[in-house]
Image 1 (cartoon, rainbow, N blue to C red):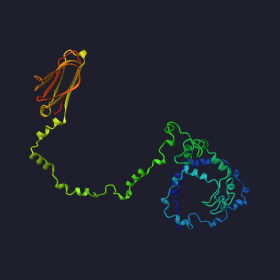
Image 2: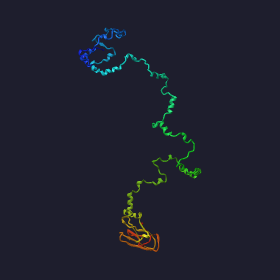
Image 3: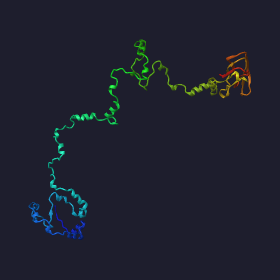
Length: 380
């Protein structure tokens, strides 16, 4: 794609101004204060140097002439130059980067050209790659490498699950310090103390008798023939015959209440059963040295609703001749004598029973200076 570049005077001045080229700076040409004759002479113009001008100037494009770029460069100019960076974008800072191009490109290897490695890299490729082990091939370590592996110290904190960890944690003593296979070993305390009798003193094989062996006959079926846990099981005869009616055909709790009521059994009457089920008792004693007024033991025989228990048993002990009284009361304040008797000498744990019609019962002795001990118990 041929193109033509046309620059006006204004464009040139603008480009120079962008580069900082001003009239003030132009005056600095006065610094060229030496005659041109001080510059290189014609002798410096050699044939070798002249070779760089290898074509007549007339073969070049005349100033202002259009020039087409050869392929593929013409395709790379696919937009107007005015859309590209201006001269102002070419700064001194960016120009410095050209210093990195410090050698002629022609001094570099052409694309695809063979290049020799410089020392010491050339020495590292001293054998053909084909002489090396193929991927996955077995390779033996050199003697020095093998020795280095065995001489490597186990780290203080080996990685969990590694061989180093197993060796460090499990091989904590020389194997020669352990008992050899089949060697006798003494048990340490307290295990040695648990073997305190010879085996010959224990049951011998003859203790396994035929009579005992017969009991194994009770295991007459494989466990697999038994019902699995939770499985339904039918009752064997005669037990199956005992469940000959549905449970729903039997009396309900309300049916039982009705039948008991028909026979005069009421809740009030049933409550009196508490008098049979529960006993009450009280006891007391006094030593001869502290007996200055005798001894009295009182009992509230009241059962349900404060009713009196009808049978009372008394256990009494006296250290010498004494008189005893059995008395009853409805309120625990006014007492009525039911019985009195005397012992002519010492007695121990004698029993006497009474039919009682009062809620409160007491047993007492006014005899002093002797040991006395009473227990009163209501029964029914």
